[in-house]
Length: 279
Image 1 (cartoon, rainbow, N blue to C red):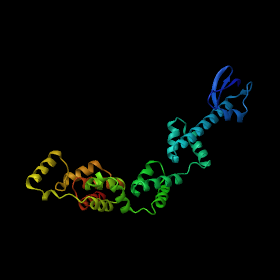
Image 2 (tube, one colour):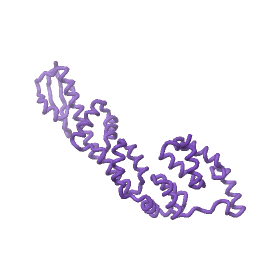
Image 3 (cartoon, helix red, strand yellow):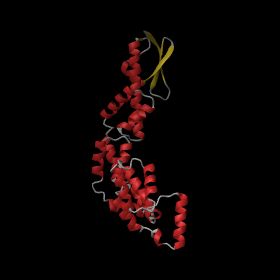
Image 4 (cartoon, helix red, strand yellow):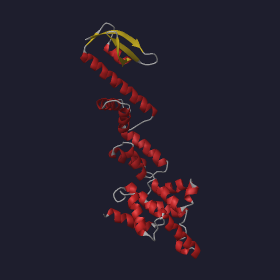
C-alpha cells in the first residue's frame, strides 16, 4: 500500500503528477485522475497502481494517435507503425487501433479510395497506384476495391499523352518518354504507342554515316552498355538489375523500360521478359 501525498497539475499539459509517500510516483492524464477520483490521503495497492499505469499509457497512446491522424491520415498498418516507433507496447498499440476504429476515424478503404483518386488525377496508372498503396500498408482487398472505383473513367492513352505533353523535355526523347510512362505504371503497349507518337524513335545505328556508326560502336563498347547487337550483355544486365522481373509486374515494367532505353525494340524486350517468366 502507499498513500497519495500530493497531486500537482503540470503546467501547460493535461496531466497530473502523483506523489506517493512523499515521493513522485507517476504522471497520469488528467482524465484518468478525474475518472478514478484520486485524492490526497488515498491508499493505493500495487494492483491499483499497475491498473492506473495501464490506463495512463492507453490514454497517452490514444491522444498521440488522434494527433498523428490530425497531422496526416494513415492506414491502420501505418498508424500501428507510428505507435510502435513512439515506444508503446504491442498490447497498447492493438487496443489503441481498436479504439480509433470505434471512433470512426480509421477507415482503410475510404483512405485508399481518396489516395487512388489523387494518383489517377496525377497521371499514375493502375499498376503504379497499386504498388504505392500496398507500400502504405493497405490490404489487397481495400486496394482492389479502391482502384476499381477510382479508375473507372481512366483512359490510359489520353492520360499518358497529357502527362507527357506537360513535360516537353521528356516527351522529346523517345526512350525517356517511354521510361517515364513505364515508371508510372502504364502498360508497355500504351507507353510505346504514346512515346512513339510524341517522339518518334531516332534512326537506328545502321543508318548513320560510316564514321558516326564506328564512333558510336566504339563508345558503346568502352562504356560496356548493352545494345540489341549484344543480347547476352543486355540479358545479363537485366538479370542483375531486376532479378524478380520474371515474377513481379513492377520489376518487369522497369526491366522493359531499361531494355528500350538501351536500344532494344519493344518486341526484343518482350521476348526477353517472356524468357524470364518461363524459367
